[in-house]
Figure 1 (spheres, one colour):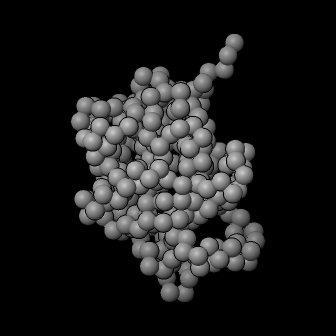
Figure 2: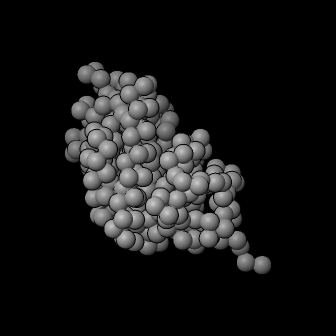
Length: 250
């Protein structure tokens, strides 16, 4: 018996739209889906909770993936067996630059691949880059909704707590990336861009700054400004999808 190609996400392929928003937190799925028309649950298994609704009559899906690159890799491979053509991650991040403020949106153009997943696909010389048109739509949408945004390179890591075990080496590595202009640290975008490219999925990402650096290099975390910014990141992502639909793109 052949393995179910959607063993983990457990969705009917016809229930998934051409445009898919992925989030980490299951609780964030409904936060996105509330802006869709006729939204309904179409899948719920493990970390993968999926809802599908409509924008201008076009199916749009929202799926949670949990945290980290391996879960995103599974989601992308299984979404590739559905109608999904465009996948945009709405996530959170920690600032590596002091000019980034809580609630700002970072539209990722590329990722520093410090994860294990993408090395199973391609050597480190292969770049992890956003789909150019997806990134452009996200920029236009950010301007339309009036959200403060930045574009640039992000740092994708597999470890959340490794910096506590070996703070010195992690600090030096992050400082080197920051010196080169890397904007934020997060955990999924490298896999999204590389695996998406391999599978022929057009991928993009909007990361809300959840941790801001103060003048002493210490983090200020979350709060009201972050929550407002996350809501605007959601709105700009859906506005970008609306623009794609109006243009008949993809």
